[in-house]
Length: 130
Image: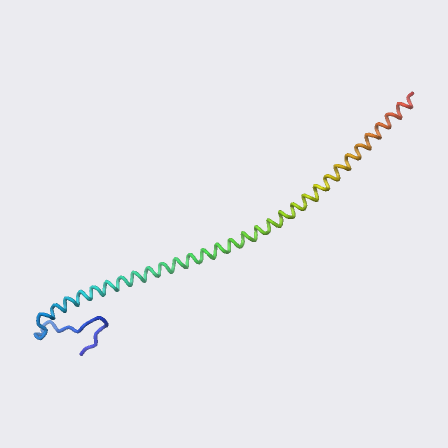
């Protein structure tokens, strides 16, 4: 008895008279079984190709996710830096506004002193003229 591949059945040779009419039917079934096997092999190959495509796409998506995560980290770092700068600008603005207000008050006082001095000089000059 010969060893056959999995799924194959032993068949009588074509010229074997002991095979009778049933052997021809078995041979036809063998072809149908082979055709079904070839179909299964083809489907398995297609499934394998699909798996490989999906695996490749998953790897691409993973790479994109890593890229986006790195970009997000960079943007968040930049945002934190800009927020620190904004806080410093606000603090500088407040102190500069305070300094501006102090200078404006000082200017008003000096202008008032100047005006009083000029008015005093004019009064003194009128008194001298009389």
